[in-house]
Length: 232
Image 1 (cartoon, helix red, strand yellow):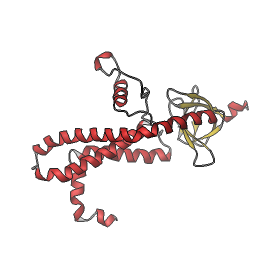
Image 2: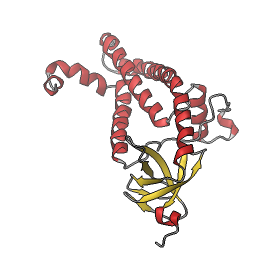
Image 3: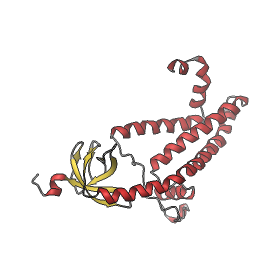
Image 4: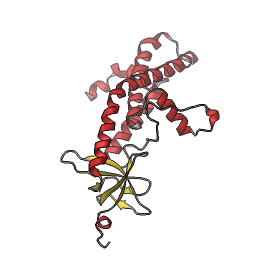
């Protein structure tokens, strides 16, 4: 397999993915793959990019003159395109993947007739924008049937996990960062967690899920000893 990738016949492939406009999607797709690898190892939150997005039936004025912050404007755009109801990291991963595929094949089949130089860059701008738009539309369609699954799973999870003991899976859990894993008889549930006050828990510590914060979809946790009233 690696011999095929390194063969001379693959040179056009490398040229396409490393040149404008495909290179833009190649960069974000690479970052996405690296992110998921790091997330699986527990060094970052899986939902690290998540921010508050209104429900799918809500509305938001994204006029830049209305005083909204950049995250508010971005949330409004995502709502307008139907990119809601699933974790932002999944949405961005799908957009990166489909944008890369669409852009690559457009460049592969059409750019051979465009001479090198400024003309390719000028032609690349609408291809980049068009590929992004198509990727957003495909992603919106794919995640639509997934929304009820995520909502139902979240409601059921909140109902059953409060008061249970979980294990810190990230390097730490403090008031700003962290994830825990709750054994459920299977692969385990990975939940966003935050400590109360200035408490800091290390990887492998046992904590109790004390409260669920709906807006940010995370759990307040305390140490198992504190929950049971045992001396530290």
